[in-house]
Image 1: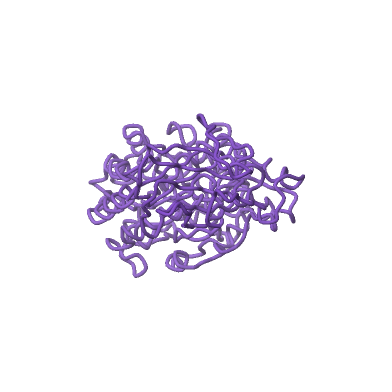
Image 2 (image 1 turned 120 degrees about the vertical axis):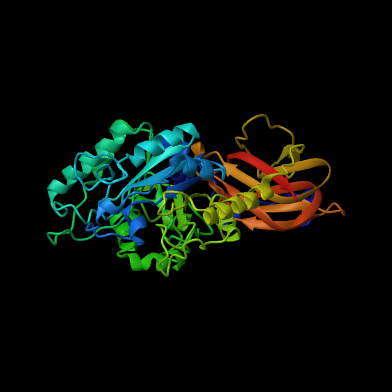
Amino acid sequence: MKHINEGWCITNNGFPSEDSEVKRYISVTPSERQLDFLEMKYYNFIHFGINTIYNREWGDGKEDISRFNPKKLDTDQWCRVLKATGSKGVIITAKHHDGFCLFDTAYTDHNVMNTPFGKDIVKMLSESCKKYSLKLGIYLSPWDRREKTYGTEEYNDFFVGQLTELCRNYGDIFCFWFDGACGEGKNGKKQVYDWERYYSVIREYHPHAVINICGPDVRWIGNEGGRVRESEWSVIPGERENNDLVAEKSQTDESQTKEMAERPDDTSADLGSRQVLRNYKNLIFKPAEADVSLNYGWFHNNRPFSYAGKGRTPEQLAQIYFNTVGGNASMLLNVPPNRHGLIGKNEEKRLKRFTQLISASFEKEIDDSVLSFLAVDGEKRNRVSGEMLGGDELGYVLSFPSKRSVSVLSLSENLRYSQRVEQFKVFAKNEKGEYTHLYTGTVIGSGKFVMLEKPVLTDEIVIAVTQSRANPVISGIKIYGA
């Protein structure tokens, strides 16, 4: 199709744009807490604890905590460095599988207050987050390899007690992050987690907090390498999303760190196309989160699979950012402090370069375009003011007063109307007045980056929606130059 003026013939690729099934799909929308969370897009993990001191990924609960004394620990430095990368929040490993707690807890003496360091690190981070306008999140490992009640119903009381302490004593919390790790305790029993009880405690104290991974609000991408699906749907079958499946795919021991970062897992799987959804009655809205570490390990160490001080390059991290934040997923980047309690100079250097690479792609916004719609009959109609709510439009035309060099497009849907776009195409007018095809994409969702292989010189860009569940509801279109 070379000329828009010849008229667009949009058949929606043979799929209905309005019937009972379509209405069922678009009735699935996010909660307010999910919408607030999706605005964050990029935030950080901090893995720090007794494992850092012992130079390992997983502890067993037998560690001598008298060795824990990171004298230079500075949570202000953590937040200052992370804020400079564009981060919106920090999730701290308040307790990992070894059972050592970085907070003041009445439920075990295996905590930071009984070490030579003797300070509540979660409290310190909470204050630093307020200082640097970052949101605070909590990782509390359900698996506790030290606690003797693990594997019994009594352990659920123990866990709820610690969870309640964290809910009550550290101000606003945007996220509680539970992984799928589960093993046998000292008594040889495997724990049956009372997830619903855990959730109810969080909802009582922090009703706006999201509960991630083993939780109802945000799902795991399926690997630890930052890889997303070509079509990353947020409307998915509820039957295919449960904590037991997460546990099956999660690490079972520390030797799997490298494997988890490299394996493709099910990122090629189709989770939310019409062909999939029609087979399920229970549909839920659950956006994806990609967790990935700056180094090739979660804690700062020099074990063979960690490469501390080396790890992922800025270029690799930037590509992960473009693929995740620009692929309808959130990016959770782990930045592990070293044994002194600081983000190391090498890590900081890589983070700065990572930030520069991202900024370079979005620093030249083309903000003088005139937006109009492609209508069903192929004519352009200038009728947009404020939010773009759709209608009988098939796409969008952005015209510039003179030729511009275009390199990146950023698109987003208004998810209050669900996730609708299933395919779109991007065209640019050339010097002959014809329209050259630049890109074909699938879903848009909370954010889609169209990164052109090379800049194109044009005075008009057309974004044609070629398949959608009912009328597309686009909330944002931004164009950036080279």
